[in-house]
Image (cartoon, rainbow, N blue to C red; front, side):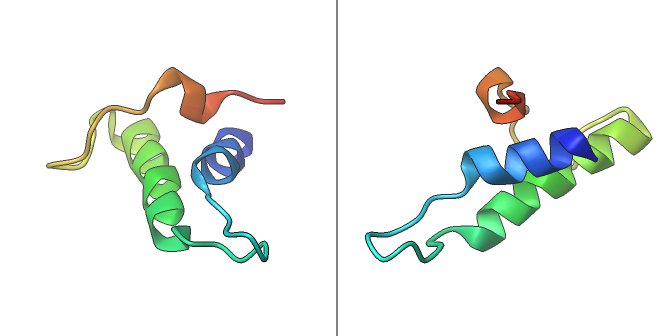
Length: 57
């Protein structure tokens, strides 16, 4: 779960007021990681998880 949260936080982009602009995309990337973790393969049509998406700070 820690990596799912890291992916969501690393992919999420905020506008000038601090409002998320790509929340659904960030959710999908985190869900993609979880799917790959559980099944051993990526969902059809999803790009690989990039190393920077998984970095913990």
